[in-house]
Length: 309
Image (cartoon, rainbow, N blue to C red; front, side):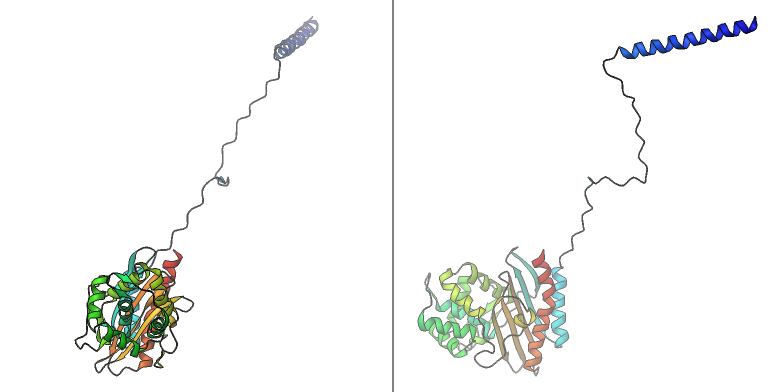
């Protein structure tokens, strides 16, 4: 009896299983499409690589040279090369319109041949009118600027009324710290500040009509080595900034009290550089030139950094 009952329960269980299966199949068949199972995503682990869409970390910009530090480096280089040297410096960036290094920018210094810039401009200006140098006049100006010919400078100085040249150009260009010589015939004893020389170059480039200015700029770019009097004039800017383009006016003058050596000009059509030095009496010309070049070499890394920015 118990065995019969067991078979009966087993049969009932089988019947229930079949019935349940049938119901499940019937219910599933009511859907037009099968239902996909949803599998939950695994949470990211700390070992997962960062998303490629994240922006890269920017590289910090290299800071530009500090103007005060650059000026100190130039001055220190010059005074280390020749003890007791007095320095005047201005470096002007025509791209940004800013003075980017300076030492005593308003202090007047003896100009010697740098004043030939003013003599040249005065010879081409007459009561509001600029003329274009031609023929013999053009050659004279080229010789005075490229070769630093003193005889031509003296002739034009005298024709212009000696110290009246300085008065006219000071008013025309707007110079603030330029002093005419106490002896009318001594044009080389004119004093100008580094800032006034920068102003003169900028006036030549930007205000003087191109037809008048270009022959002067070309002469400055063709500075002769040596100068017409035999003096080596590639100290400072030319020797200190190899590979650069320039338009320069240099000066050299031996006085009883000092050796005056100045390098001035436009560098790479962007920077106006003026470095004045007054070195101790008895300093040799060779040492004096090396001193000016040392100062410009100290400036070179800063110019490269500003140019690359």
